[in-house]
Length: 198
Image 1 (tube, one colour):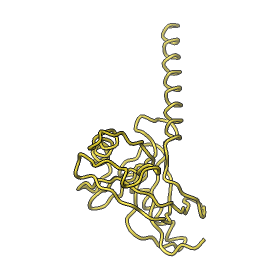
Image 2 (spheres, one colour):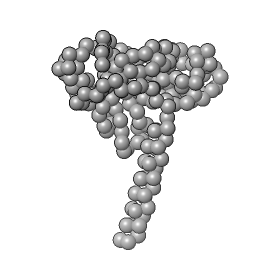
Image 3 (cartoon, helix red, strand yellow):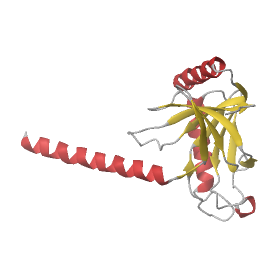
Image 4 (cartoon, helix red, strand yellow):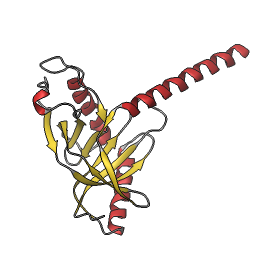
């Protein structure tokens, strides 16, 4: 019995250390820069800096049916699936715009220009530059699924309506953590605002 307790304690300790390492590594990953313009009760308004993204489109309106495929496609590119066999740093968050078609995007590291980027081996991957944007964002924890994404999209819609804020375009899901991170998971739903004044 004592041996079982010792082994269990050791395994638990290893798991806690591993999760702490994963959490710290995720925090060090370059994130899309933004400043918070205004905080509301359950969401905030942010100004995002211009950035470039590598993206892939998939024919589905479901997070669960497209997230793994989209991630594998883009991860394949940054892990060397390109004409230079070059590895590109991972960034955060992973962006998914979910509609009749779903688009997944990784931000290109800020120290790389479009001219620096190697050509993807997968012809479905393309690059897009996005200018400065004002976005509303609502956060939730745990693991994302279609139900949670719909729930928090509806919550954000209701909050924007309640506060007289107008949005434009599609809502997007932002995921900040690797799938094997158990603690302190961060997910968000965001949408671009129109005519926001602080």
